[in-house]
Image (tube, helix red, strand yellow):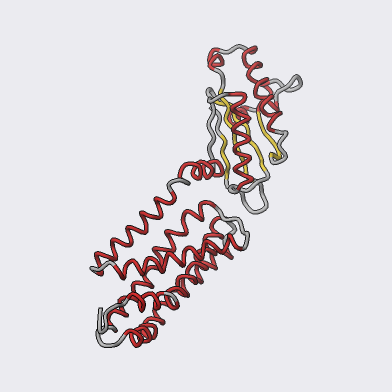
Length: 302
């Protein structure tokens, strides 16, 4: 089998990819002739892979061997890294990031090239390939995951508040903030890491729904003695310190992570969390009061 492994790239260094090719079954009882036939096939694969301008270099045993350098001349430590009883390994240095359209296109190209020579007897592994497989596998399930997360929060709120209307308003307010947050990269034409897209909606929902719960609970308490307008004003006054303290802390942590982290994915998650918290805080103070006011049909209290 063939395995492609993308190691995580450091700053200004290319992603490292490893490909494992199958040693033919006849090699278990092989002759020199059989080995040469396998090396010829591997060399053909290396030659075709090198045609891609995204593949910067390839390290393979087949590239080292030749008339001037027989197999026995290669140090044992190197040979063990490039071949075993079951596999032959090639190391690819590629000039793409560990995630993105360019990376995914290269993964597909390498897969197609490997399949051309080895059929289905290969496998791909590593960060870039894993992300590609993750995207390919769960894209269709993403909507289901979000719906399950929303439903879980909604059920907890309904059981806690013992009513349906207010929990729906709270979740709707926070989801609006999440949609706004995720629309910003699109409007700015900024690429978004797929993993960040998967994570941030659930993280933002869980991290900021407390603001909406605190606001609505205080509003319900105020409604026992005040009318709707007075309750909204009193609620904003009484909850602003708590919400802003927590919100500013979350915003600071998010932006610090975005600024300090040299990991592209973590950096983007930090910025998304910071901007998402800003959206949630603004939504709680400027959107949620209006929703509570409009959905409050009782004249004196909840």
